[in-house]
Image 1 (cartoon, rainbow, N blue to C red):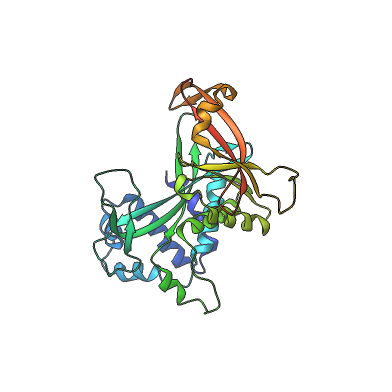
Image 2: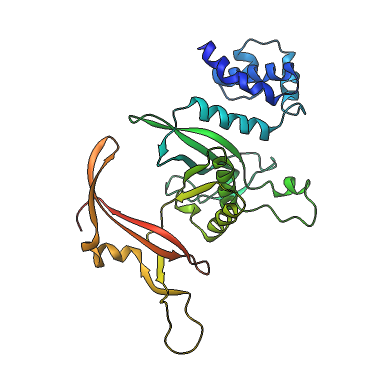
Length: 310
């Protein structure tokens, strides 16, 4: 076990300007793995039986100029790519992204703000005070079980004022949580070349698609989004090639309510067998390329899936 950990941590030596800084990094990593509670640096000192005088040294480590989070993150992506059994689908790595809201009691803490709770759990309130995190992970494992290994996490809301201290007046404001998730997923995909990013239906929006399109224009990396659509989503057919009469041709064709296709086009569904949650299930599906997004009208591929005959 110690030899395996040494092989994983030794490549991070190049991220630190001093040997002592790297050694404290190793101490913290081992401490986070072995700690029995979540009291920060205090937990590391207690569970590793370190001298109490090490407390200030560990605190100063997080503010040290001998390392940077961006360099450390890039090295972590390389280590995961070399050592982890990654899930590859048609030459693309599978990334997973999601947001997490952590309740905080101290309303004067940096980054704490009033957040709306979208969860369908009735035991949770409609609003809470806390932090909004955005996280990107990658699927690893084997055919029996797949796990999400975290690659990146940061605060994505409530810190606009703090980030604005480092910006000039001419720079744009901090983007929304949805746009930041697309940006961070694309930055992660650069380490692998081709990737799929799995997100829930909350992230299917026109700003997210516009940011992904802008990222593709500035890089050779290609990342495809795989999300769910809401039950009331409306898409559009392509506009006809020629418009009879005078005037500007329409941007879209006929509007289609996807939920109604389960009944109106039931005969067009195909049948296949999939392995879902360890069991073989027979499902029916229909693939359609339609335009989506009010004012955007970008072509997306919609996959309608049903587990039982219609």
